[in-house]
Length: 233
Image 1 (cartoon, one colour):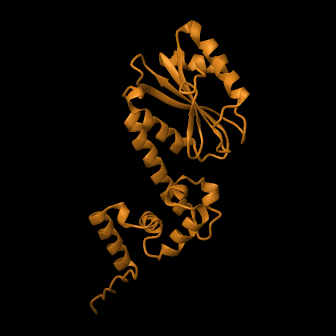
Image 2: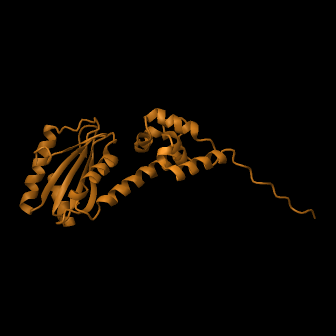
Image 3: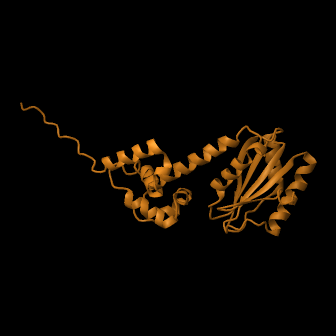
């Protein structure tokens, strides 16, 4: 009986390029790589053998930058040629990881001492959303974050908010104060009359129960607006 022959494993024609990118990244850091090269490294997992450079460049062209690609909504990413669900998953896990890292920066620490990280977290979590989202950050007596919850998601310019539900949830969690956060998909973070009225209604509902509204932050893709810093609280 003839001995079985083993065919050699096919060589990945892109392995050399991938190895050089990894080596450059490990030796010199992310600044040594162009935006599309950073994307290539993320896309390696989604396409273990293929040439992902054309897709990386296509994504940069479609969204403008590495950060914008990572923050893009899945349905927008899928409109780009050759983007699959596997590609979307690889990109969105990076986005989720960045959010988790920033959240760890503010968790169990007084938010006043990590305010910049808090704003960065809010921008990353909400700044590029296409519809309004209303988020509540619940704080304990030491102003440390004990919960971060999305209360409602609305349309491109309106999110229904119910002051009683806000106060009820704060009581359930034993929160001493809350930070209201919502985004403006238009990018204009100036508060509307409705935003101001809603904030006052929540303050009025929370005050008798000794729950303080610490701030209301409006988030855009590039900047934020603090009610407290602008004298509205």
